[in-house]
Image (cartoon, rainbow, N blue to C red):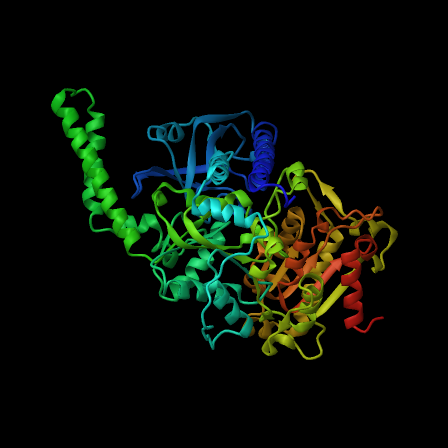
Length: 640
């Protein structure tokens, strides 16, 4: 591919993105037309029934309505800031989604402005609130097809392709070729609080004129290094742009920067809404500005005048125009003030398409979690920057691509990977990890990182208790069972949530954890706050495991220490003890998307001191990766 021109490759990107767009649009159409309401609710794509709350204008003059869900708060949902939604109403018996009859969609769409637990604030066009408040049947809300994100990505690709003689054109041609990237030369700076590979990486970032990749395998302190690099860059530049694929990743890096005393402006809303995070959001800063009350007054007058439309005439229009001019003037002044006071502007990649950034240029753009971002999304902020620093790990979770055809065509290959491949000299690998017992780390290091990782001495031999084995594989095929129980340990396909579960394996996972907890002792678990992650690739299995934990009274005192989630839900996290339920068990040796080894890399590197893997060895070890993992564990356990 690399010998074709940058433009041709970008056209291919656009074609693949188009396939993904069609696929998502079609999936959305099916979600709307054929999927039962109960299933939408269990999948986390709808809230029903809703309690409709108050309406108000927020600080940036959007008309908002508050809603809350009466349903099951156990269910994780997929609503987050900026996502488009549509309201619907449906007749049901006693608010039970399973009994829902015909669904009627309202004619307008809204945008999520804020979500916290079971409460959500949605910006909607004016004049529609009454329809919701006076609806005859119960009202719900579901995710709407996200046209905007795609539009912004397509627009970014067009701009990159048509760029001529600009910095953007230069970066495009550089990224798509083997031409070496330019660097500055200066004496290395010392950062005694960093390890040698981190210190080298920060210096590499400072020396990069065009591009640098900060490659951070699990537990290597990528965020620490990135914050240090941003901090040092700010000694040389007045303002930088920091982006990431997801809201959660933007929050994480923003919070770390704020902890260092760096003034951050967060465009878009944080996912975990806490006061510390809220205080540096754009909306909050806007509402806190001394000129805001005056602007609010002007806006209110404009709204009242519009209501009294009938008083037309020259004077009325002159007055209205004067007020509008004043409002714009005040907004411009407040914005200039807000942007003038901060050193870091942080947003998601798509959020960097925000009109507020129009005309802004930045010396440096930092993209965190760059290995999870579609290439088109990365180009959105790149056009505002002079040089780009990518941070992430392309051996962990890839971007989500729903279209199989687009995936085969390479839409899942990221811009960061392209640079790693075309310009290996631009990569700084962090090599010391501070998370895992050495035995847990070793396999991942050998398989994914050419054996270049080492464990910091303080974690290398950490155990939960003396003589404990850091890593174990429970082969579920060897469990002695009566004939009637054999099927329990085979995977099943469940209709309701459309996913795979393995009930026998789930029960065994929970029993193993109970036995392990009994061995450690209740007091020690609570005193040391020993935390546990139960990870599984399948959503249906995760929901089943959650129910089992809830049912078993033994776990009641420990529930706050146990989290159950899919692999994607654990990205970037770590726990003292991790149990992985692999689910797949069949005679054909089918393992589905467990073939995506980067996902497994994430799963096995979450554990600090103890890792249990539960899986059917005959099914899984037909794949060379799982065979190696199984043999490695047998070897370190001396079970050969």
